Every structure is written in C-alpha cells, then in structure tokens.
Image 1: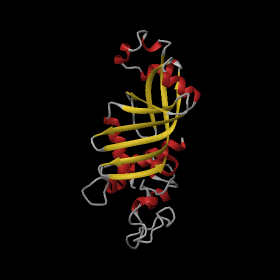
Image 2: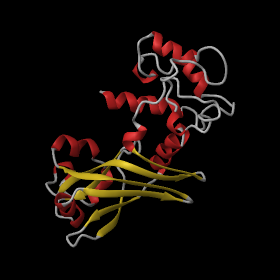
Image 3: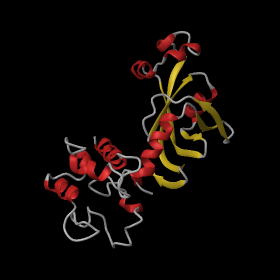
Length: 233
C-alpha cells in the first residue's frame, strides 16, 4: 500500500451519496441499513443523521461496535470501528442540511434528531483494482518526512531502504540526502505536516507531476502529512 490509495479512498468516499452502516442488534447479529453521509472528509470518521428512537440508534447505545461500507462501480471501502450518538445542539446544528427537514419537522432543534459519529479502527480497500488492508493506527504511524508510507513501499527491499527517518534523510536511490527530508530535519520537524509552509516547492515537486514516482492522485503524500499533523493536535 502507498499514499496513493489512501487519497484515492478519501476522494472516493466524498463522491458517495450513500453508505451502508452495520451495527449489532439485540440478538448479537449484524444489522445493516443504508445511510446518507454528512460532510465526509476522509476514511477516519463518518457522520450520519438518525432519529433518537431509531433501531440503529438504540443498538449503538447498547453496543458501539460498527462498520461502514462505501461502494460504487467496482470500488469498495469497508471500515470497522466504533459508533457513538451525539445529541448536543452545536453538533446537530453543524451537520444540519435542508433536506433533513423531511425527516425532522422540528428542524435542527428537533429532539428526535441526533448524529451518529463513526470512528474507524481498521480499513479494507479495493480502489482502482488495488487492494489494501490496515489498521488506522498503522496508517497514522509516522513513517517518513514527506508522507510516504514506507512500511508498505514496494522499493524498500530493492534499495535496502529503512526509510528516511531511519536513514537520517539519506536518499535510498543513490548518494546524498533527500532535499525534502533534509529540509524537514534541519527545521527540527518530525514530518512535513508540522511545517507552516507545507506544501512547499520541494514537497510539491515530489507530489505533483507526471513522473512515475509522483503521487497518483497528486497531493496524496501531502494528505498523509496533514493526517499525521491532525493526529498530533
């Protein structure tokens, strides 16, 4: 797996207008329902509207284990994690959308309106004929300066590369330092996501372009750096 499939997955779920939410029913069996995503940004979290008296709401309150699946065409993303019910007015208002009035006549203050927050713990992806399985903890473990996911790099063994964090910024493809890694280290950062100038010209040069080693989609490693930075806040 590399940073590309992570960003492809993020872009894919943003395009999905429906998802499948699986929860555990009162008899211990999985129960799946179709739900509409609200403001989905990445694979880490998902939000859905629900009624406080809905079966899925009651089941989440009894057992927080849950799964969310996004599917369109041949692409599929399955996330496993935990769900919780949010009823505070600030959260309800932040996720309110006009079409919800058809379900909650009282608007964003309707006492029957609540938000399901899903937090992923592991993921199984099939996007553009590429598969990956990992835990969110593995993905959010800092593996490089620039956002590459070195643990899964196909060139790691070929170049006997331990990753730039282990090699003190040395470039695995030849002699000398990687300019991005050296810049990051000289500034005292663990990864580029900690820098206020990200994405700088050097990092964009690695992430954007037509070279086979540039990100596809562009900006994939930058998205990883942003995820690492968000986790540390």
